[in-house]
Each structure stands twice: as structure tokens, then as C-alpha cells.
Length: 456
Image 1 (cartoon, helix red, strand yellow):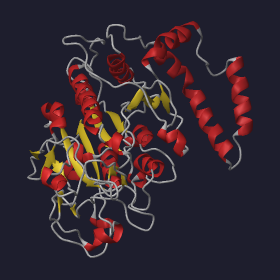
Image 2 (cartoon, rainbow, N blue to C red):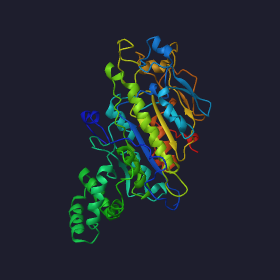
Image 3 (spheres, helix red, strand yellow):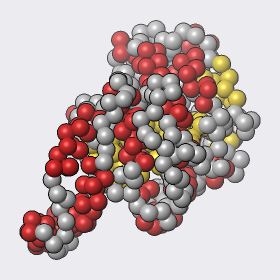
Image 4 (spheres, one colour):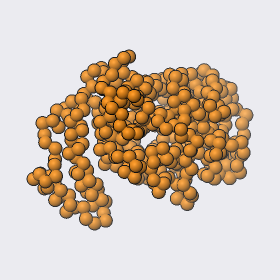
């Protein structure tokens, strides 16, 4: 996973998934097959400010000039079943009907060493700020005990400017391209092994696949893909362009569901078009609308999963784990600007993640961030990382109870905090990914603990 900062900031991937029309379906129910399990990753691009969602602050903090708030309405308590409470803004109302189907993780640390978009997006997907293998394809490994799908994941997108992975099994597939793609595939024979063309291609690839270099390694992956190509060809030829749903958003939902049902892909990656990088005050003032639009799309996608049948007995929500994340959060304010005319900057010390669906205990609030009100004093550990107190930071975390700890550490120690490594390792545990794939807290630290209490 590598891209330039320019490419990153230009990313705009696809339309938002939304619900089907009431009572309308685009797939015939199939017979139940084993224990199907899929993954949907929703990425809020640009660094989403969690204070506009489930890690809000009281208006008294804005009145004390501690945090910007362009919504101007007081947040309300969002109580978790586990006894932990967060503050949620009124913008989250569309998600309230799903509160028992997802849990909130607040105060999640990303990579403490970097505050750039690219480094933290890399860290979200690969566990390395400089890139590597995305965790999403690991959910499709044969070592998980499940039969791998033909593709690791699809990205339903209009144009791919930045790839959020570097794995050949994650490919763009947009509803608008399905009609022409399937028509072409039906007219062309699959590239079967033993055919003249297949043998010619295989011979050229084999000649380039020997040796330790990157080109040789990539060619070996291409050879593996060549073996799968007839199967993928036949599966993609079965896709039908979802004319029965009219909007681009509904078509995106239809395509994801059909790819899951036809065993084309294990996962899907979806990026709403809203861009949350709001350094300038005029952009920051647009946040209420940005979040309102994105949350409506997320809620509509969850509704679509709940209303779309996977088979005669289960909905798509019943067989899909869903994760909503951004590459990091935002600062409380920007520098010395007036509190009513300030933008925000990057905050890698506190992020919020939503996770729900298959295998997840819903209705929990896990973790918290500090500087929750205008009189709260920071820990020395916080001050060592953020001496200007521009950022909230995740509170120390009790991995046994999944609750924030009350202590105030003198020294910053990554092992004291909830990190994105623990979130990914929890997903690994849910999908049965071997433990040798688990993320470490840092190269010189142990494996990040999985949140086993989050699993149902």
C-alpha cells in the first residue's frame, strides 16, 4: 500500500451504499451454505472528527474556548450495555435504530509516531506507517479454515485514485461497469489451462518469476491469479446489472451483496464521498453537513444489509461484520484561532471506530478519550506527547473489563492504551486468522491484545 500525499488527498471512491426500496429485493434467496462470513469496511476519508459523532464534548467546553463546535447543540449520553457511557451528537440519530447491532470504540490510538494522512491510513490497513499487506485479504486466507473466495475484496468505486491496499486480490468493481463486463465475459471463453494463449502467458510469467526481487514476487502472484482466472471469469459473468434498483447508491449495495452471495469476494471496501480534512475554518464549519450526509449513508447501508436476504433464513447483516473507521481523529481546535473561526488538524492519539454485525456483541461502549470537560487536567503521559493540549488522547484501558482506567500515568506506554492493532486483532480472532499474523503494538513490543469480550 503506497501512494503519494497528492494522490491520497484526491481520493474519492464511489457512491454510498443505501437501502433498497421497501419490499424490493434484487436477489432470489439461496439455500443456506455452511457458516458464511463476510466483511464490509467503511472508511471515512480525511480524518473524521469523532466529537461530531460518538465522542462528543459538552457545549461548556466550547464556551470555555477549549473545542470548536459548529453544530451548536448539546450532545446526549449514549449508554452502553457494559456500563460505559459516551456523549453522542444529534447527528447520530439515524444510527440509533442499530444501537444493539454495533458497538462504539472510543479513544483508539493510531500510530503515535506520525500524524500524516498517508502514514495513518497505511497503519489502519497494514499496521505499518510505510505500507505493507492490508489486513483485509488476510480474512480470506485458507488458514482461516474457510474456503477462500475468488477475490479477497471488491472496492465499489467510480475511479480509483488511491488504493487502500497493495494486494492483487482486492479489485475495483463499480455497478456502472457490470453490464459491459458481464456481456464481454459471456462472449469470451475463460482462459483455461492448456489452451494455446494460456500456455503462452504462463510461459512468459514463469520466465520472470524466478529470483528474489519484487518483480519475481509479483509475477508469482500473477501466476496464482492466472490459475484462478477461469473461476473468476465464470462468476463475474453471472453478475447482473441491478436495474431493479434505480439510484447509484442502491446499485452499490446490490453489487456488494451479489458478490458475497456468488462467492466472488470475502469483503468489500466502501468510501463515502465526503472528505473530512478540515484544516481551514470555512471547511470546518461544514462538518455538521459532512457528518449528517455520511451518517445517513452509513445508516442506509446498514438498513440495506438488514433488509437484503443472503438466503431464505439470513439477511446480509446476519453474515457480515461491519467496521467504520477513519485514519485518525482531529484536534480540539486549531492553534490560536478564535474558537468560532477555527479549523482542526490531525490527531493520531484518539480515534473512534464502529464495529458490528456477525460475531460482534452490539450495544457496548468501549474505551474513552480524555479532556472530556473544560476543567479536566491531563496526565503527564498526555503532556509528554501533546504539550500544547491541542489533542484529546485515549484514556488508559483495561483489556479485561474493556473499560477506561481511572489512573493518570506519568509516562506514556503504548501497552496502557487501546490501539488499532487490538481492533484488527479482534477481527482476526473473529475470522480465525492464524496468530502469527496478529499485529504487534510496536516492533519491540508484544502482540496487541484482542478484545475477546467484544466477540459474541
